[in-house]
Every structure is written in C-alpha cells, then in structure tokens.
Length: 461
Ligand code: HEC
Ligand code: HEC
Ligand code: HEC
Ligand code: HEC
Image 1 (cartoon, rainbow, N blue to C red):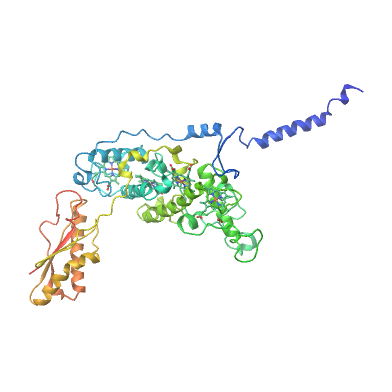
Image 2 (image 1 turned 60 degrees about the vertical axis):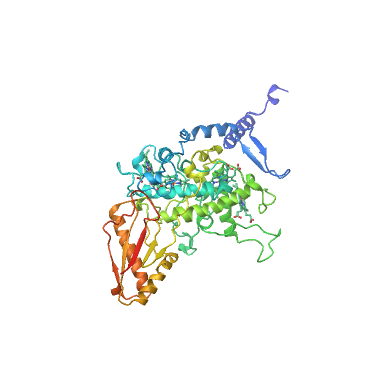
C-alpha cells in the first residue's frame, strides 16, 4: 500500500474545494450567526423579534440622525393667532413656541431650502406657495396621528421627521404603477396579468405589484385563511388572486418593519390575533385615514410634475414611517416635545346667529362663503317683519377677518353677502326688496382670525 491510496484522489480534492467554494457562495446571502431573538408571543408559538446585532449596527449608522430638539419655549405671553396675520392651525401656541415649531419644521422638512421653501420673502402670511398650503394640512394630519391614532403611534408618536427625514418629499411613498403592457402571450388575449410571474412585486417577488390601492386606500378585506383543512367548495376561504395580493401586502409589512412574519403572526394560525397584529391592524386603518383624509385631497394643490404616472399623488404606506424598523426612529420619543403637534386643532365652531329688532347677523367659517343651515335661522324674524311691512327693504353687508390677503378677503365678503341675498330670494322675498350694501370698511377686526368678524349683517329699512 502506498501513501497515495490514503490521501483522497486529486479529483476528489478538487471536487471538495469546489463544494466548499459553492457553499461559501451560497451562504454569503445568509446572515452570520449569532442573532438575538427575544420571545414575544405565548410560549411555544415561536413568535419572536429577531435582531442581528452586526447588521443592526450598520443600518443604524447609515440612518439619518434626527436634528437636536431645542428646549420647549414658554407657553406664556400673546398667542400666535392674535399676533400673526394668517395662522389657522397653530394659533393656540405662544409666539415663542410657534417660532420654535417653525424652526423644527424647517429642520425636519427643508433644512437646505430653509424658511423660503414654504414662505415668500419676508411676507410670512402669504399663502401663495403650494408647499405652505400642503404643510398646513400636514400639521393637522400629524396632530391627528398623535391624538386620534395614538392606539398605533403610542408613546413614540409622529413628527414631520418620522416621514420626511430632512427632505421635502418623503423617500418612501407609493404611486399607482403604470399598467404593464398587456400579457404578451396569446397576443394579449389574457389581459392584464397584474405582474404575475414577473419579479416586479414587493420584495422583488412575482406577487401582484399593487397590493396597496385595495388595502391602504380602499377597504378590501384582508382575510384569506381557509376555515377547513381541505378545499370544500364555495365558502372556504378566498380566491387565489386575493391570497396573492394579501401575501404581497404582508411582504411589504415585513420589509417595512425589518421583521419576519412571526413578528405579528403565530404561524400555526395566521388568522388568529396577537398583540403586534392588533397594532398592525390599527396601522392599516390609520393608513387609510392618512391617504383618504389628508394626502389624496392635496392632489390638485401639488404642481403636476410632482404627481405619478396616473396623475396621483405620492401616498403613504408602512415604509413611509417605519423605514425598516419595528418602531420608527427606534422608538425615539420626539413628538411629545411639540405641543402644537399633539391635539387636532378644534374646528372653529360658529357663534349662534343674532336676530334682534330689524337686524340679523349671520356667521361664516374660515375662508368660506357657505351659509350653513343653522345660521339661516337668524333670518326668520326678519322674514316675518318683511311680510308684515310690504314697503320695507333689507340691506345686506358682508365682512371678513383681518387674516390673509386683503383683495381675496374683499371678494370673500362680497360672496358672503351674495349667499345671504340668495337665501332671502329662496325664501320668497322679491329681488327688488334686497339690496347689497358694501360697507366702507369690510375688514371687521384689527388682526388675525376672529369668528365674530366673519359675518354678514342684514338691516331692515
Ligand atoms: C414646510 C413649510 C414651512 C417652513 C419650512 C416654514 N414655515 Fe412658517 N409657516 C408654515 C405654515 C403652514 C404656516 C401657517 C400655520 C398655521 O396656519 O397655523 C406658517 C406660518 C408662519 C408665520 C406666521 C405668519 C403670519 O403672519 O401669519 C411665521 C412668522 C412663520 N411661519 C415663520 C417661519 C420661519 C421664520 C421659518 C424658518 C425658520 C418658517 N416659518 C419655515 C409653513 C412653514
Ligand atoms: C405619515 C407621513 C408624513 C408625515 C408625518 C408628514 N408628511 Fe408631509 N408628506 C407626506 C406625503 C406622503 C407627501 C406627499 C408626497 C409628495 O409631495 O409627492 C407629503 C408632502 C409634503 C409637502 C409637499 C412636498 C412637495 O414639495 O411636494 C410638504 C411641504 C410637507 N409634506 C410638509 C410636512 C410637514 C410640515 C409635516 C409635519 C407637520 C409633514 N409634512 C408630516 C407624508 C408625511
Ligand atoms: C407588521 C405585522 C405583520 C407582519 C410582519 C405580517 N403580517 Fe400578516 N397580517 C397582519 C395583520 C394586521 C393582518 C390582518 C389584517 C386585517 O384583518 O385587516 C394580517 C393578515 C394575514 C393573513 C390573512 C389572515 C386571515 O385571517 O385570512 C395572512 C395569510 C398573513 N397575514 C400572512 C402573513 C405572512 C406570510 C407574512 C410574512 C411574509 C405576514 N403575514 C407578515 C400583520 C402582519
Ligand atoms: C404615521 C407613521 C406610521 C405609519 C404610516 C405606520 N406606523 Fe406602525 N408605528 C408607528 C409608531 C410611531 C410606532 C411606535 C408605537 C409605540 O411607541 O408604541 C409604530 C409601531 C408599530 C408596531 C408595533 C411595533 C412594536 O415593536 O411594538 C407594528 C406592528 C406596526 N407599527 C405596524 C405597522 C404597519 C403594518 C403599518 C402599515 C399598515 C404601519 N405600522 C404604519 C408609526 C407608523
């Protein structure tokens, strides 16, 4: 026996080397252990939160650090709504706190562009930039996220930075995708394939490419779980198309939060309920509210070139806030430092209409010339007086508050007067007996927004 017979044949050694190289290449896509897992479901359900400390450290280093928060300013002193011209949602803050909010918003949304991303020169009251109009609505949205949706946003809360991270346009949002060319097979006879068998879906899967419209804008059911082990005809679960869409949405959830399915599900029972899944359930409803109540109605405010291929605005989904973390910004509680972002600014309620002697006063909403039903009641006694005295006429004068542009406001005051005239005509008063009477001074207060200033006065003569 020679030594040769003991060592592996050279071809075998080569094969071994190739196999080792192959294994290295194959495993290169895997994460190097150890990973930290913490149990978070009921015992035995394998529900866990998995963190690879080396990857996490790298990802954390790559994330933008939130700007330093200045200490809260004093709540004393005059309010922004009294001092400034055109403050509609942050009016209850003290002037100092209001300015601290403006500075923070600039850091969160437009640190490079500065105040003039939203403002025009030194006229801070001017609303002519679309970005300021959008920002005002975004402030209300953030207030709603921290108050009405606390069940999801919790102690961490939400600021503009949660989504914007120092950029005017959030890095993560979705548009309705361009409908791909109709399925080429059979000359297009198969119609739209919704991305099936093409790696265009979430997480580069070949799942449907738009699971968002139905679930995060619409209210499609996310229930596909069969109730029996085997197909049992109609009634056992949902069609395969819906299952695929659900799966695509779930891939988005996993990717957005940087977690596996078992972060939210007990994999023995995907249809069952566990705490994280409940939080996520509220997140889905919150997402529909963000998109339908706040973002989509801003479509016409944005310049056309900011819209997607279907003319739709960029919409929010889980990744918009979460950006790869189970709690956005690692759960840093920034929002609580900003009182202006905590409560939804109360919708201004109108004072009751005044009806005394031969005079009525009817009130209007901010920037509005809609005469609401409650206010028309203020005309009742005047109508009776007109009926009793056929020679009398009424004079109708419109007023506006000092907030905003003067020219627009004068037009608004006129439209308010016209709305009241129309109501009188609709009640049967002859046109010759209703006269519009422009007052010398339509501005009914000195500064800011005042509900008592937005009015129409009607006098019997
Ligand atoms: C991302 C948009 C945005 C940026 C950036 C921004 N603002 Fe504003 N600013 C607004 C909005 C929206 C309002 C109106 C708030 C309201 O209606 O409650 C406003 C109102 C104001 C007002 C009140 C003006 C008035 O008379 O009605 C002042 C003053 C002001 N901002 C100062 C600043 C300063 C100073 C900066 C830069 C440090 C700044 N803003 C940056 C959006 C912005
Ligand atoms: C839930 C995520 C979210 C939060 C929180 C949020 N925004 Fe936005 N913001 C969006 C989305 C989505 C858009 C629409 C994207 C687009 O402009 O195409 C947007 C658009 C904007 C724009 C217009 C950008 C442009 O030039 O097109 C401004 C300005 C803005 N936001 C300001 C704010 C301010 C100020 C706050 C905080 C008070 C805020 N946003 C909070 C998601 C958010
Ligand atoms: C962030 C939490 C979260 C993650 C991660 C997640 N899901 Fe879900 N999943 C939910 C919620 C919430 C629902 C129920 C939604 C509803 O009822 O509106 C759901 C529903 C489902 C359903 C339908 C259950 C039924 O009742 O028919 C299936 C199946 C499912 N998920 C599979 C998965 C898979 C597979 C993954 C991993 C790729 C995953 N999920 C990742 C939260 C999550
Ligand atoms: C407006 C921003 C925002 C959006 C959009 C959002 N989330 Fe959240 N989410 C948060 C915040 C903030 C928290 C942390 C809450 C806390 O501190 O308890 C959170 C927490 C969670 C948690 C619990 C994490 C934990 O470790 O306890 C789950 C699960 C979750 N979100 C799922 C989702 C899903 C799924 C979506 C999309 C349908 C979504 N979120 C969209 C802001 C958001």
